Image (cartoon, rainbow, N blue to C red):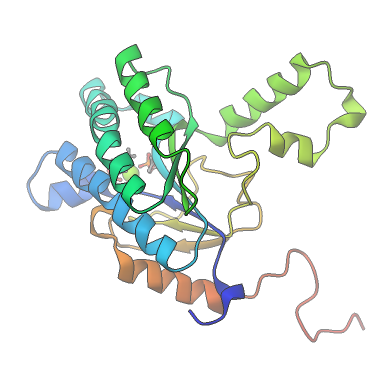
Length: 239
Ligand code: IPE
Ligand code: IPE
Ligand code: MG
């Protein structure tokens, strides 16, 4: 990646395919989630080394509460038990951890662990790694609307900037590149406001197998895209 303009500032990743990765190996789905959890820090570090400033990973959606209770329990347990080691690895590599979404589905002890892990990295200055947990765009926008209304903001004073400032991602750049692993070609309620003009990249690679080479493949494809944001293509005349 020689041209710095071709490197996205914010990459969002839908970490899909953990269950299929496990099934292919005759393992329980939770083994896929564990392995998937182990991929987060290495992929974020690979992104940091390529000049990316923000990586947001989708760890648990608001719709994932419809899964069987044993799988939900395993996912919640995984977050609260692994977040500490992810945070320590981030501390070593100067990555900042941030959480998007809600924690109130976790026990008070687990919430404390997650908050402690995030605080551990508050002073870091490198790439920001956002973990989207109990996150969904629709509930994020409802929350933003409630915050705005509860402050008594006049309707005319509500603009796109104000809505953005009331999202979990306040202060962050919009998503430039959205990667979905696992072969599905949908957004599943992930960062849909922030990805309004993101380049979408879908890959069959299952998240537990995703690594630095896959980051490079996605970045190479991103560099080939022509982002127009509604304008005419380069060199086109309006005749
Ligand atoms: C993604 O993997 C992880 C979460 C949604 C929490 P899946 O669990 O959706 O794995 P597949 O799609 O069934 O393979
Ligand atoms: C999206 O994956 C959510 C996460 C990766 C956390 P899902 O497996 O839940 O998405 P759908 O149900 O296939 O759309
Ligand atoms: Mg899935």
